[in-house]
Length: 239
Image (cartoon, rainbow, N blue to C red; front, side, top):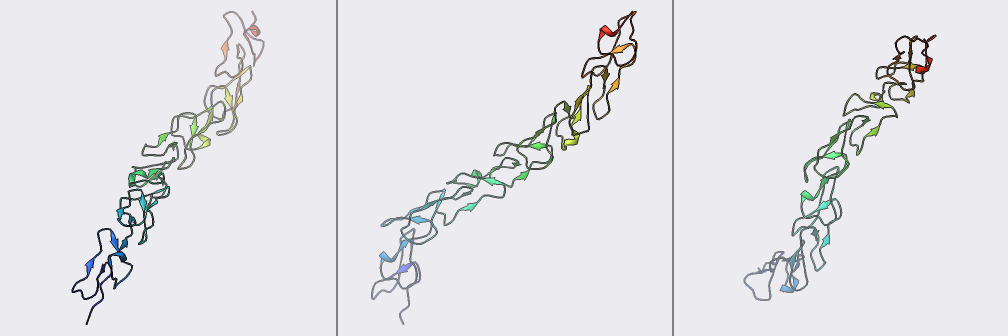
């Protein structure tokens, strides 16, 4: 008995073989009778002649429809029937033509087109791409992962170094007092604080004086002395 031409082929009457559709075309089923039944296949577009969809575009169906640009955060090679999504935590502009167009978001690092990992606490990255995460500078901190910037310590507080991971690592500098991570208050005239941290300001002993925000008390000039503690200026030193 006569057999149906398989999908992708056609024949006229009294044929011994079925003819294959032209390159880039296909049929929508079996038993097709003419070359006109061959339509541009998925990944190709055209009316009389079919051409491959350019990279960055796709076409999912059989027919004359135009190729569609890939949406943002996806890409395709030439002849694509669908677009491939970027990996987690990566982005790409619409119409991207390769996986390398997928770049790690700010706060994440990794090779273009590869897996992205979050910047750890104490680090940040404020641009998209393959750059490494940077250390938070002294006087700043990052207390969680995937951050695009570091937070500044409170006024008159400092950190022991870079890559600080907690607000409580911000400690009041010399001449200021307050809880770690909290507000720092100036040591008033007649007091001092010589170390970094939460210690209280101390009173200048007799024979010494200080202005505000001092780390030490200054001794009176030779031959002079004060009449008590907590003096605030050299003028308090008397013969």
